[in-house]
Image 1 (cartoon, rainbow over the protein chains, first blue to last red):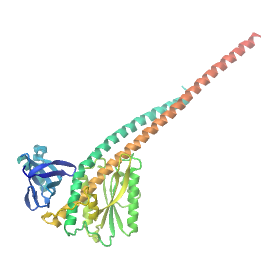
Image 2: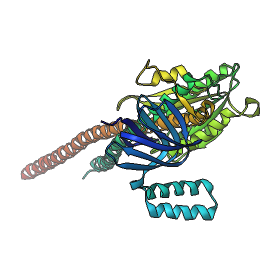
Image 3: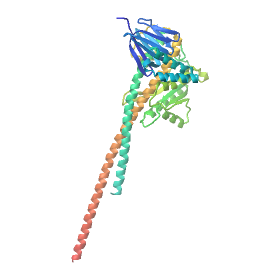
Length: 124
Length: 305
């Protein structure tokens, strides 16, 4: 059996995803980071961006995460985010509309959020 | 129908209508308690993970941070009071307000100046009526608070604590909210939110006494703490808002249940009185008829002679 790590992806008001995985890629403030089983204990600040989870079943779960933390210890990985959405929960049309609106309002953070959502969907 | 009887009948009708309303309110509150409790449960994983992370940074590094450092001589404190927008919840709001006033009194006796921040229209009305200064106020979401609401409340408080005291900042942050113990018990409690006492934070973890590993911080321990502590405060405020909402609904349910019970009792008493009045009326009518017949019989008997 391949080595696995347990992943908990939790948003402030709910648990978004939890399960076993072989690889998790997330974006921290100092760059993308990939965590595999047996990684050194880690605590980092996340940028808003897509998080990719390669599950032990060989599937890929992509989530859009806006701000939060990644913490890894004892083969348990927690992704804490204020807002987290799985790519199949994202409403593409709504995200596109939000992107248009953010562009016209010159709202950089809203534009980035919408962009992250759309990229999470396209990475599916 | 006699006048007395009519009055009783009217009162019974009015109390029955009130009883229907309070019964409906009781049922609505009961379903909302369950919903609010579910939200508290849903927010627990995030809070637990966050607490773990805060403890890990706090104990695993020697970083000093304005949010964790205690000032030697605290002179200003902020008190955040969580009340509700709507009443009809028994002593819910007055208990929370009383707790906040006790806390304010204690802090003032320690020589600290207190800034009050209030959530909920009830608490606000209490302070405005007494013309006390309120530094910050939020209303409109106490029934179903969201994380965005908690962020909104937390933002000025974090800002105040990060500001130097001389420039209008505060040294301490206290929170007063109603803890949801069970359906029957809710207690108003006062807690110090900031500066954080890391030992107390560690106590809250379900796995007490666990040795935390040495973490690698990305990008650095200070940056992680910088980002982590405001989130921790937000999550604590969110949790307090949710508990307060659940408590409010439970208190409403209880208040409405006793109102319904009282209405039932009142209806019973009034029905008895109405019955007695009806009976008295009948008795009076009978005695009038008997008396009238007797008088008539006497009169006929007299005319025979």
